[in-house]
Length: 174
Image 1 (tube, rainbow, N blue to C red):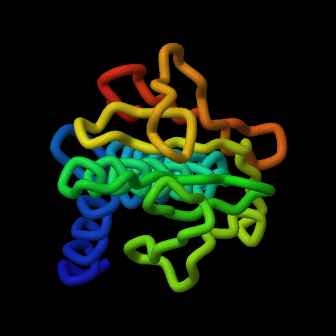
Image 2 (cartoon, rainbow, N blue to C red; image 1 turned 180 degrees about the vertical axis):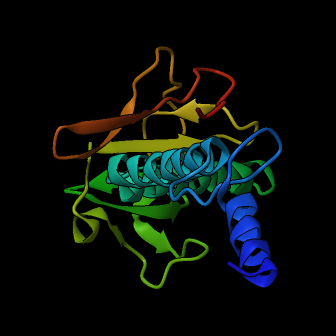
């Protein structure tokens, strides 16, 4: 063997030898790569789980809109000398004025005088709430019978139920 062949053979031996400080060509994943993938899978699965359980979002949204409509009627009563209220019958509700449930007015953000919750797959309990000029809730159209006990307004979608409570005397809506 020539010196040149020995040098080549020795270089090959040094390249292939493993020892302290030498890196060998191993295939696989490092621990950091595995942890990064697990974290990403956890984040994606948490997002999917939240989206999968949020199937009653229309119920939540429409309940909040009804609350805002009740507050609107209360505010209109407090800022005018007229009685304003909300009346619900057969899954529809509307804004009325003058102590007459048939004197319908347009609610903000709505296209029709009646808000039809059945069109969203929802149902709502029948109710009449009017507000006197101090914002106190009443259970009749003319704002003469004050609300003295909590009587929730129930909005439902199948078996899922959301309740709106109007606090007697103060008219706080939650």
